[in-house]
Image (cartoon, rainbow, N blue to C red; front, side, top):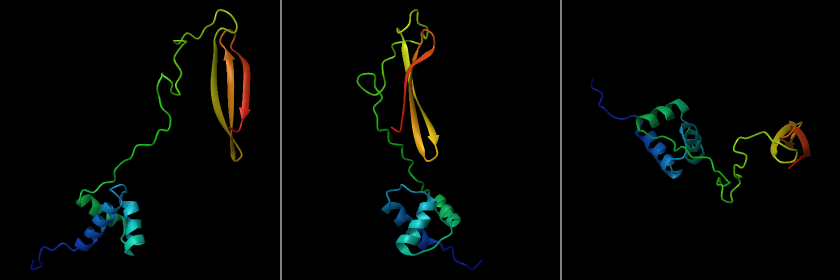
Length: 131
């Protein structure tokens, strides 16, 4: 009852805020805990770091994954839809489709590219390689 209402975790909260701002709000409580040990030499339980970050309303910023290819039908990597879902051909060698499949063999990936004729559903050509 006589105890004053002091914040016992003020120093720890200040350290967490400093690390959080230093790394541009990118990281969550797990990384913040590791950076507290790495940068300041302070070991704090991850549950306490989580609880204090929740009290201070500090959250990691979720980053979108980088997409290296452009998705456009005007010169990008996506081809124009010529077939319009009509997967039947009236004569041989009129409509061909292709696909690439990857297989894991031991420690490497093998890629199989096949070209299929839609007239009689036979494989016209294929190529297998490491790239």
